[in-house]
Image 1 (cartoon, rainbow, N blue to C red):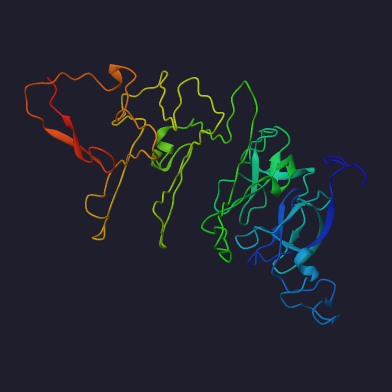
Image 2 (cartoon, rainbow, N blue to C red):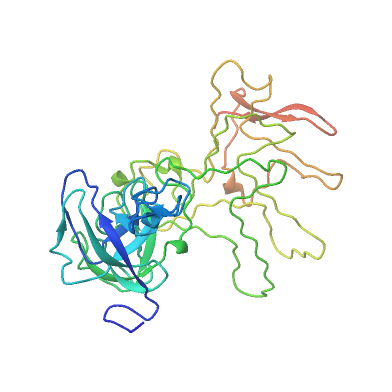
Length: 375
């Protein structure tokens, strides 16, 4: 098609019929406003019954009547998955209104990856700002709201629209984003084939690089707001939060909410320090004077009710060395004396003990780390 101002040659326009179902309120039509298909409509636009191949105003569900891909409305919690595109600028956009239950034909830019003008109230940074559709909103906003669906990435830097909706160029394509959950409407995983391993998302990469950093998956969180705005607290994770909810029966010898394994295969040559997992805190100029507890790792456990684990099987930490090869030389190794603290033992009796139970191999039994009062 011919190139027009504000669009590129990849753009595709489509004629659709806007039907206002906005609860008796008139809707003003704006250029760049998001629209969604009435995916569950049985209304025929062209007056032909697709089920019976004869004239008719409706077609029953199960038949692809043209209303499902020609009738659009404002986004709502029900149709938000059926994004049709954004309205094309015209002489009537911004001034034309459609009364409740009334309709109007208009053009939309379909979401095919083209760069088009969209209506948003977000301060935009080119190539970075994610824009989403939300219930009843006539502009794109941030993806953080309830049931929001990301559909575009800003393709220009524009701070003037922040809080006051206006037009911004954006790359319009919901397929750029992985959507799995909005509000409480999680995707359903069919269990028809329950005999095979199932992985919802998989990152499987191989590298032969000899220099530079390699990471298969990286998550970074930069917190710049004040502590009071982080009302959820870090108990829900700043860079990463995982949660496993179990209501079925788990069989097998060992289950874990999160598993991490490192396989050292033939050909591997470790010439420096190596850790299966490293957790660290590095402070540089931060004010920690108000921090009550400070540690790289926190272990928490809560067992309610009377049907707890078998007696003597509730531990904050479980250590196990598998296989017939070499075993750990000790419980832990300290890099420096200061890493474990410097305590001078007094003549006072031991006040606390930390039980460590060894289940397998020589010397099986319960041992204790002794804690004495500092001098």
